Length: 501
Image (cartoon, rainbow, N blue to C red):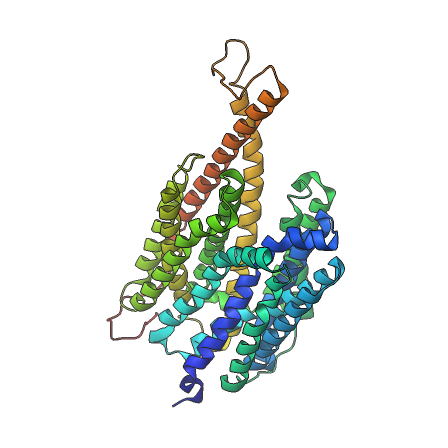
């Protein structure tokens, strides 16, 4: 037996731990930010860089991880990534100033960028084609469930211990993952290739400017700020240089051969939009439940738990159905279920029962689980083995960019639509024989009554703004369905491996 396949179980455990580590750390620190700021006496803008430094470093290093794995060997790069991520996590917990945290988060993002794509490539390599569906189901559970569970875990650790444990929690799991990879994972054959400094530099500048723009846009009031316009100009110019160079260079940083594969190209486009929907709703629900409906952090986590359960169930089922059912049908069913959940979420109100939250989040988890696992499997089904490390890096990069754009866009629309709806609702409340009769505690004759009235109007306006965001994502999800016709899977018998034409 191939020694790589002989140790499939311990390798799978090791790379799954690595995947969960990076996926959890994308959101776990957000909950602890107020506590970190209080301890370090940091300003809001300084705290913003705790998140921005990690996001920018991860965005720049994600495409580079594929090249490094091909040039120096996947085991070596993945192992160094796990060790670097673990050490930088410990340093974040030990930090004594806000500047130290920003530097260590930068290192954490840079070292952790390759964990998810390289783990995905390893799982595809150690499993035969007929097991790719199950392997991607396991991998997808780590990628999707990590960000869902991280806020609850981060809140619990911060409330019961210290914000430092948000980072310390990574250390034992990182050590276990490193030991497993060191013992069981076989090194891939390195291949000599020149490094395209111009292509990498242009892409890095474009990604860095985009992530800074998205992360600081709301803080700077978007395009009312000269800083945002500068970042937009830098991003556009760098991306234009990258595209032109990629199409004309002899050995570009990102190989155009990747995008000659139809399934890979369509899969990347689909995962970009799935990233928008998946992570935008994930970012919208906690403030809706906690700030608008007044749920405690733990209760909000429990209310969102059915989403994780739905994803787990769907990924488990999808992993077994791939190869027996047309993959386009599975992805279509997943997107349709996700669209249905978003349509139901458009009926959210400030008086809704918790059962509506449970049912819609479960449906959404079910839908995204089916779509995510099947799409991941189909995307790489026709791509050459030699392109897997580079392909998985690009796949995860586009998912992350989609999530960043989705979160920023829905947050900006939420703020804008809240203001618009507040103005519209307030225009119907007038003191002179108006269209709405006021009762206590609302009053036009006292400051307390006016404050209570303004708070009620703002609350309703914000709820409508949330509904508008869900409606936008519903339409966006439906728009993906025609793209499924461009994928090229064919039905196989249950006993056969998946065959892609």
